[in-house]
Image (cartoon, rainbow, N blue to C red; front, side, top):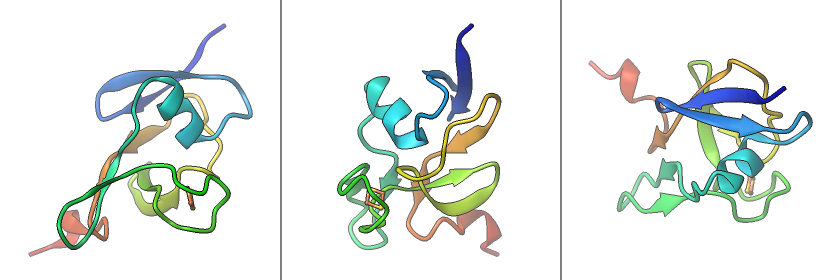
Length: 90
Ligand code: FES
């Protein structure tokens, strides 16, 4: 049985126990965030929860570390821009 989650409309397969970041990289996706200054692409860097380069939105909660959050079936994951609070802007 293949486990999947949604990333910006794409179906991403994963192995149970795999992090969101690992699943995205395995699917060929290397960047899912842009920096607050300069809109530079970011993805995994340290891979152990230290650098915060891998911030991502998971089930409408921004600023989750993709390298630490385990992938679960049916979760909705979105790329994050800047602080991840754009949807709260007025
Ligand atoms: S890759 Fe460094 S905190 Fe996730």
